[in-house]
Length: 118
Image (cartoon, rainbow, N blue to C red; front, side):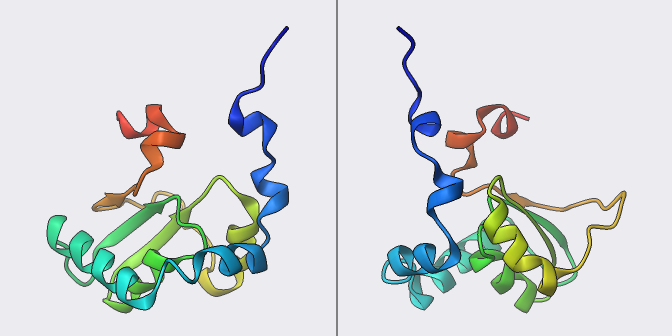
């Protein structure tokens, strides 16, 4: 008898459409919390306007948009298609050969342990 892992048993991609995400997370991910987290990232990584940043597990761009507002050139990467499709119109394309300064993973190590170890 084989057992499914939690990620195999639960269809995250099919469950969380943009409206679902905002319904559950907007009460928790407030403007104040988002600004505080961006401030911590900014300070911890000694960021400056003009830096290119790769936001791994970017979701709908909560952190990425705030870093861009501070003058960074931000690209987002996510394993779920729905948030990326939502962002595509606003963000444009990913230029080949782009290099990045800091990388914000905010918990990606739990989903992608090999990525966090590199």
